[in-house]
Length: 55
Picture 1: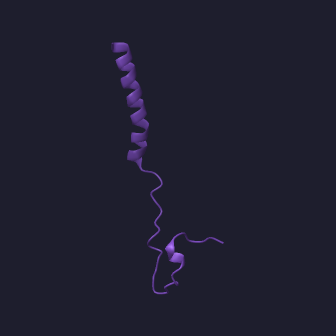
Picture 2 (picture 1 turned 60 degrees about the horizontal axis):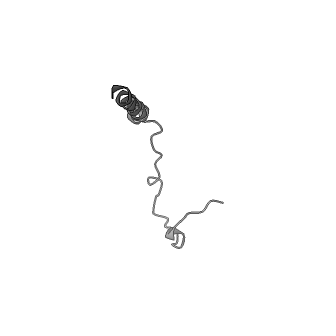
Picture 3 (picture 1 turned 180 degrees about the vertical axis):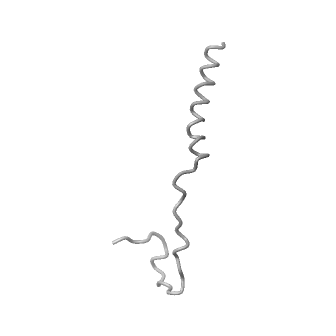
């Protein structure tokens, strides 16, 4: 059986409170973040190679 963590367990349940809107799943894929995660290490590698072979 799953339990909740925190002080909310000690409080009696409130029947008029709807908690369904509090827990929203995050977006599974953000294309901008995907491109940034791909481009940042690639850009850093290319910059290090350029500095290594230029000087």
